[in-house]
Image (cartoon, rainbow, N blue to C red; front, top):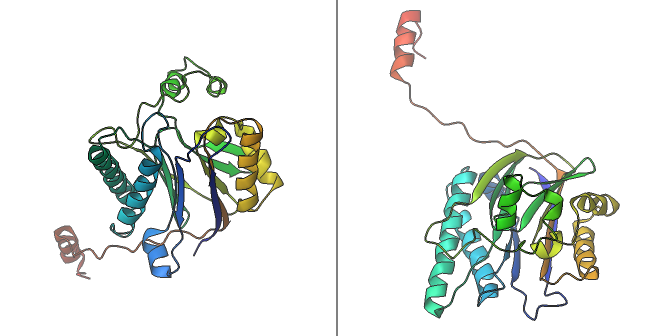
Amino acid sequence: MSILSSYGSSQTGIVRTENQDAVRSYEPEDSQTVESHGQLYAVADGLGGYEHGGIASTLALETFFSNFYSGSPYKSPQNLRQSFQAANLAVAQAAQRLQARMGTTLSAINIFGDQLHIAHIGDSRVYLIRDGKALCLTQDHTAVGELVRMRVLSPDKVRTHERRSVLEKCLGMQLFVQPDISRHTIEADDVLILCTDGIWAYVEDDEFAKLTLARREPQQISQTLIETALARESDDNVSALVIHAVQITSSLVPQKNNRFSLTQFIRGRLTGKTS
């Protein structure tokens, strides 16, 4: 069984009067749930330009987590996708009840043995820190992010662009959503950081690696990221969830008990073996 250490923190910041970010993690205590569904971590950032951003982010995470662990065992991508749809619907229905426009980003990771599954929509980010280097594993669903993907704008210009926070995709604004789903292999001593734009807009990618190397404990890393962003006068809520892969074991997915096929039967008759 993989051994993980994690810590998440979220603060209102020095400009906003309400914290519209939300952070959540679940590390099951029973080995059966860990084996069938793994550990789940997520951050969400309610849209500050709309009403009830804090409700949107909190509701999205609650719905996402409850749906994920009620999903089929050993089906991480499927469960992530279905849980995103459920969270999207929950936020949209809440907006309808409150007669308000509500939306939120959501970036989640599911660690399943040595497999890392990511589901993402919006402009929060997931970073992997390995061998002293930081790699962003998500793409920003913003107008500026699209310019980067089109190679019209260089990635180092994103943080200072005036339209950096203009989202093109989020939860709660459309009937159906298509989150980015990806899979990666993780290794022992990897560090994963999930953070909202109140953090990454004020901390350069290479600084994520430097701060992580200087402080190995997830709580220290999370707090340092928040303190750094606030010291640089971040004008948003600040949230950072840090996971350290202390020990990683390979995923053990049960083999299907396939029925004896017709092809196998014919081959067995020809070779004189039927089992």
